[in-house]
Image (tube, rainbow, N blue to C red; front, side):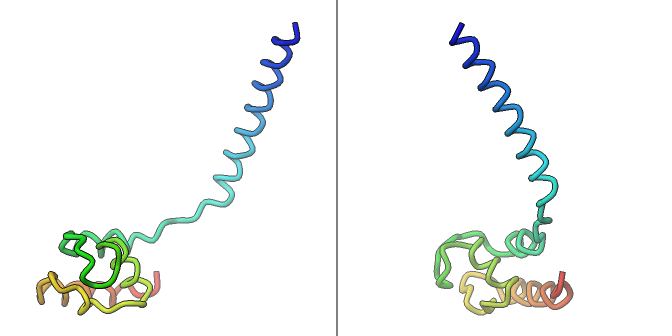
Length: 94
């Protein structure tokens, strides 16, 4: 009988905590910044670390936040660098 009570208690507790997490997830949801994904798609994707970042995703995050310059990406071609600069200028404050 004690085992059944323990199982029921855990099921109820799990259901209540699951509901609380579901509500908190909806209430505190933050819309992701799509600019990072867009810039990451334009970068070469070598993940070489030549720019001083751990990979292209780190470079994309720093480019969007304004902490880095596209000139630090050595494998990126000049026309793609201009395209990224133009994209960041057009989508600066989203």
